[in-house]
Length: 316
Image 1 (cartoon, rainbow, N blue to C red):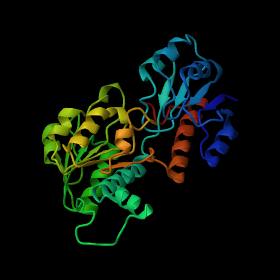
Image 2: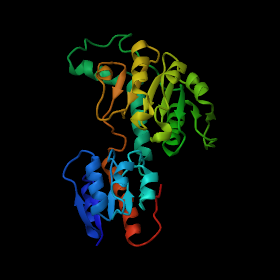
Image 3: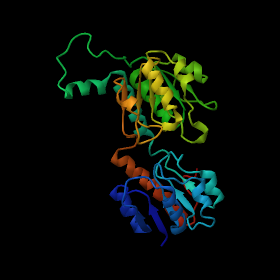
Image 4: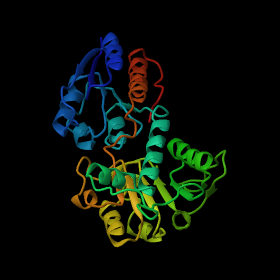
């Protein structure tokens, strides 16, 4: 029976399935694997099921010239914590869990859009603090979402799911920026990045993480946005220059932001915590039980295929 390391405990149904087919070790903590743990795992296990933030970078592979491990079956669609080229050079395949996360992540994007545009977090804090004195006509006026122009940056599965929700649910006009030409089956216009940003009332970032997209969005992009526009990020934190975002918010260059991810996660800058025009969530993108179960089963399907010598369902 192959030895499988699961870096953080998954839902119980997934753990039971894993234990039925593999000799499973599961770390007892909820923090990411540090470089030393990654080095040890590469030498001790046949398959590793990493999760967000586990440090499978080039130095870890360089430290284990002949690893026992032959598969990193990542739990999640994003894999910017894994140096895929270094893994392949060391003889490991890498898989992920696309599809399972699409709708849940798109739902969180819509949650952030609505919460930020309608000042929901600020309003709830007011009520909880006992500071609400009652309704009046000009209290807590926000941005009406219906019919607005939404710019989606990155029109992959998740970007399209967000755009569909905005267009068909709220009658929004969709513009988008994508690295390559992308045809979609709903009304939307592809534009260059600056033009799309300038046209938008709401900007949603839905690109993959990784070296190619590090600080994809910075000061010049916030300068291109309208002063009333809100910016939403459900991709990866380091796709955004967080300091530039804070400057744009502080100066009133943009109207607000909704964030589920952060550049130095889980650290959230004090400046963001102090801003009332920012909605802050603790990386809730896929945090629904059935979604995490689907992700776990998809990761395990890759492990099982590897164990049986079959083609991997979700190679990256």
